[in-house]
Length: 136
Image (cartoon, rainbow, N blue to C red; front, side, top):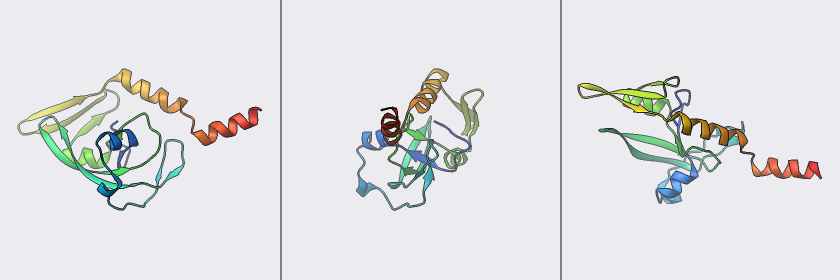
């Protein structure tokens, strides 16, 4: 997900584990973040990885968090600024300069909607347990 409102580039567990990364790959990062549910989240750490967009490769500092997300990562303002990109949520596109041309990354509206629905439907286990206890 590209989020021009995010001041951080964030990586979630599915991608972290899928890349075969371990706790030893992380550097310390303890500044808390706020999750989609509005809870404070203490990051697992920070990792710098190359991200390829077309022919451009930029180094991105990802804050790794172990919380649920329908996304594998959020690319925010730090990535956008490094790539010198402009994003449009309306058009689901990111455009950026590359040598003598302007390249674009096109989003998928269907996938974006599915992720949004998944995020809305997701109820953290603690909330689910509390709700189940109250319904009894």
